[in-house]
Image 1 (cartoon, one colour):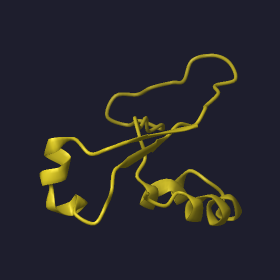
Image 2: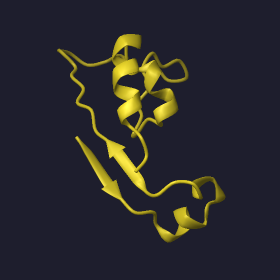
Image 3: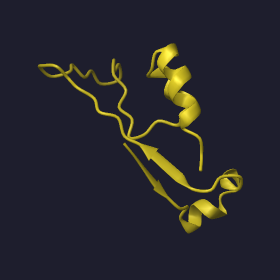
Length: 76
């Protein structure tokens, strides 16, 4: 699932966004089969991201899946 929205005023003023038209946010489901993850302070095994930029998607997908999925995640 994904959502589309226009830039906020602050995002429009950011020079890094000048070539872009808006924001597309993708949502992926995650499952934890059972139990609680062991979270150790200052030495975590797991990373929790609210979102992942397109350039980091390859860290969360197999190469075959990434090669199919990443090209369709173009900016609008």
